[in-house]
Image 1 (cartoon, rainbow, N blue to C red):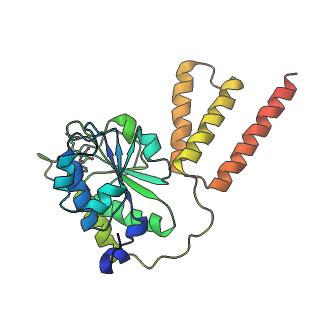
Image 2 (tube, rainbow, N blue to C red; image 1 turned 90 degrees about the vertical axis):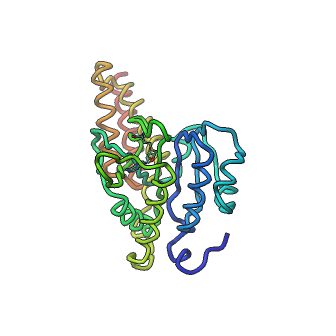
Image 3 (tube, rainbow, N blue to C red; image 1 turned 120 degrees about the vertical axis):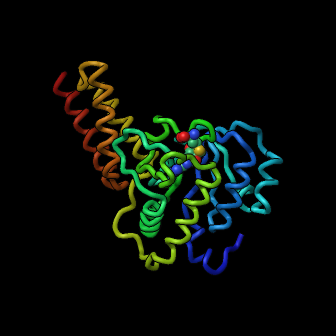
Length: 256
Ligand code: SAH
């Protein structure tokens, strides 16, 4: 697919990925593909769809947006689908009590433009039609997006929610200065951060740091929040990895 004019300027090549968590209806996936192509987005990812693939209803509803459906990928879990991303926006009609920034689709689009301009990979996550995203999925996100609507009737159809986010991304392109080379080090991806945190917790377990399972649960969460809030660069993560490894070794020697 070659995009021209405004679509090309809108940065479709490295524009945000659209992630649909457990979608229930093929028609909605087709309409999502259509809305994405309307606004120059091409990277569609499904996590555990509740219908078989290929899906005739999705193809019909896509109304010719085959380029998006042909490239679409299906993943067994959200962690796998978001593995290569640096920043994930999760959309929800009802923001829960979470320690995450909540923003409009317009603000998220501006933020996404800034991040993509710095060479980061960004995704927007959408929930299943009936239930929306649960706290488990929202926990993986860096920020929450809620499209402001009539408070008495604030739940959008899945494809319409994608359409509004894709539209805001497209519109924000005209207000974004031309791409500069990324300043400094690239940030660690979610998978790299998850790998380091697993190693850190293992070392803390080994050293008896947590003392009780209850303390362990709340402290592990606090550590995760700390690292999510200030995403370290890959180089910083390597340094921390070396530090923890060395401290672990010293602890071992002392106990001999
Ligand atoms: N019944 C669910 C809504 C599911 S709609 C609920 O009340 O939470 C399907 C998906 O569309 C949602 O998971 C979300 O990703 C998106 N969506 C719907 N309304 C939205 C809104 N006002 N702001 C942001 N995303 C919305």
